[in-house]
Image 1 (cartoon, rainbow, N blue to C red):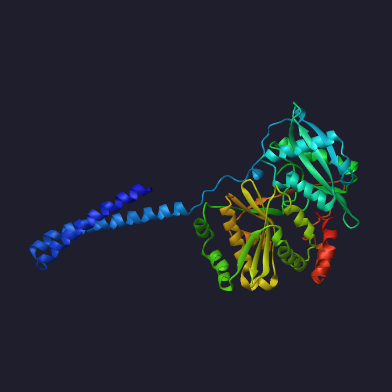
Image 2: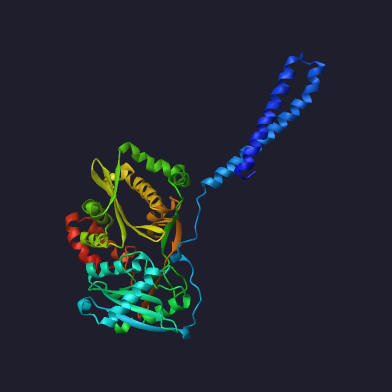
Length: 447
């Protein structure tokens, strides 16, 4: 009895049995207690009562199974970006070319050089393994906001068609040296291709840039394993498969999580989704939160640049308490995934449960916009942010970061490195105004 029709049939049968039970019960009551007539009816009463009881139990079980099936959201396969690569090409079938885009020569590019870059962006626009951060809008934003040079490794098939590529952006500073990252400032980068041999060769070819571009190291940020030696897998992305409607979302999240974000109702928070009109409020919260975390802050101009890219589905989220912004988020939608690369809440608003409440509003927004997944962003395994995201039901997808260097061991450029603990403590004691002035000059060189 797993289908609706079967349950309805059982209910009709139960109705008839209860009518019969009522008729026999009426006859039973008309006779004197312990009479021969009552004794003759008792086996019929017992038999029909047993049938009613059994049918009620079957209906209850079928309804429970049906409810469980309805509450279980449809889970599509994982996003294409995380799906395993194939083994389509052999190394001898491939050719590789290196192309460079230097910020100071942007307005004097050779026509053929520019054409290759446009071919690359057309390739990324339709390739399932390309993230939003491989698109031209992000590339243009990075060049405009940070003025970085970029190298591009291209893989071609025997017919000369592009079948893969790897962009690498060069950063440098007196403190961190000169190095390259495959799409800095964001969660995803790495090779774009559907063949593991192509991805492996692209990373191998990137090693030559250590000498030609005078780099101390190259960091290739992937979500694909076994493309090189000893990748770091400390980072994971936390993704939640979304149900089709808000009611299913509420059931999926469970009572414990619901109780946490429902606590905010008494504080009468309100949320706004928008664009540039929310930028000042967004940045006020974001910059203060970054100071409290001890992390150099991006400039407001960086977020403005992203919001002004028409092809990006970028949205700002602001949560207000008494018309004051207390929690904010930056959203980017691409294909079937809505991602939250940046989110912030004022420490003074922790008692409002504003952060939990904001994430619930964002998940509702993702469903209303038709996304299949919500990407909570990158976290270190078992860190506080990891546990926060996990409680929403998000699943961890590992990152694999491959470091190329002539040195035996390359330094880690992230807040987890104990080397930077003192810097973090000093930064946390600075006035927010000062961090807004200094932060953009520092973060430009970190990636």
